[in-house]
Length: 249
Ligand code: F6R
Image (cartoon, rainbow, N blue to C red; front, top):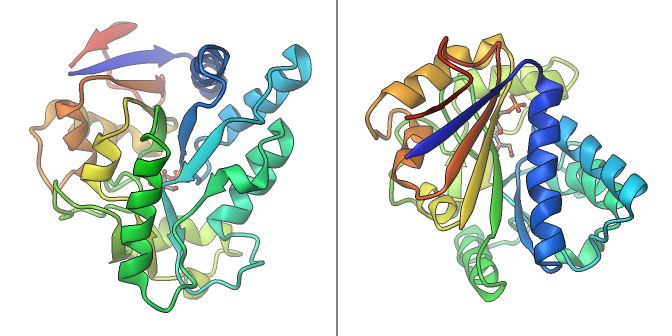
């Protein structure tokens, strides 16, 4: 079952997501967060920085696991997702760098790095709250259409559509977007105790409508969330299907 909450603006989505994170961190100061990158969660990360400034909430014991990471970018590349999260979230909320984990894409044995990432998540006690974005082709993390529903952290290849979508982070140059990535699998994500799927903007409306109305199928990786016990979609009006303010699918 998926709860859907619709807000007038993307800012409303960001505030609601930040509210959920702050409430959890207050309750459990060593919360384990699952962190998405891309443009959608940036407003939420802005809100968290603001809440920390205003309310002094401490993130020093919060731990974070990234969903995915590009393979082949230099360790100091600004678009390495680990660098993005350090810059856009951790540095601003005071989350220590050693509390942050990303799949280790520089290891010679990537399969071993993926297995170790799964083990690290398990050793941390699992993810308490996973923040997700949605791809225009329905992907979550970098689980492209066709991903196995029982997939775990692994090496995979981006679709042409995702490469095109992400070129905006690489000076609009598709040639600079790495094709290969390490990503948490769908089964890995499903083990998070709570999931927030953030969806904003008209260009996501079709993918969200398909996710919500469709059955669970690898062709729409986000549809796997129908089988999760505690998933909430936070959508702005531009992305949401034309229904009431709050609904359950
Ligand atoms: C990134 C990730 C991706 C993005 C998705 C949407 O860590 O996991 O699934 O959430 O590609 O990206 P944006 O938010 O840039 O539209």
